[in-house]
Image 1: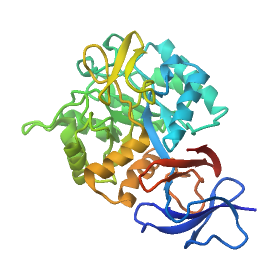
Image 2 (image 1 turned 120 degrees about the vertical axis):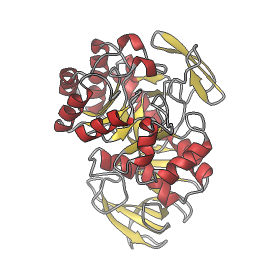
Image 3 (image 1 turned 30 degrees about the vertical axis):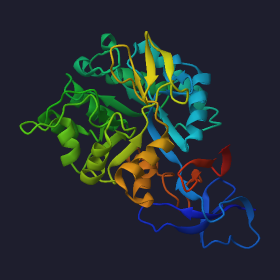
Length: 383
């Protein structure tokens, strides 16, 4: 008998927020959206929202290094599984474990660990790796290790991809060979994103013409907007073809910049990410980070030099922040939580609440706090 999540408020882009029941088939896909408060007669109701819980498509976090004490750089199955479990509690049903600038050998270990988790995805799903670094500009290193940064190497990506599928590579587009790399990656079905880059607008356009389609953590460690050279920040505001990550913690972007991003770029091209580190979920304190440490205080994670080191943001908090900072309606903001990410990475089986898609679903209270998370129709988290 099909399972039913009953009497919830559907939140989906370009749809009115309204009461529905969602019927889930035996394959873990959405069989029907049943209108109204009452579920279909004879239903096997597995959860009742009481007419007040919001139902979102499961969030998709395409940029996360770690959470709850674990980081992908540890290079073990257990580390990836810990991140996946923590992400589930944030409402995330799909995430991309994101590497850190490291040696080729260390990066391969991260790929092996993610591949091992992909064999037993018991928490959130992970379809791909996100490779952030080592193809970054040392002058825009942020908290990453400039000693390990190097020119783009498609052969290295092929070796990683042989171990674990790579879905996204973030790189500095002004580096020697970057455009050839972007073109080769596109032929492999890999999305590329400009990151830790001092590129001017002309260099950006060359990369875009080669196949670049994302900007990584908008405004952070990228060439700024100037009235004589608009840089990557200007490119994100100007170019309607580019998808743009934002870290909405009020630290990486101030509330007014979040407002500007949603107004100028629009919810159709913004993708919320956490860029979270191992210290996420742990609270204030000092924690190891590769060969250094990071200190969490006042909602930010910083290395001893003072640079931001990713974030401690959770995905549900990012959603609450966007709503607070912008005042936009939930159905509009929801697009930036799942649908944009799914479409940009060609994950055609998820990202929205429609018949035939995976029943990857997140239920939130009226205060946008996570109550329950379903992956393939299976409840994998309850608050």
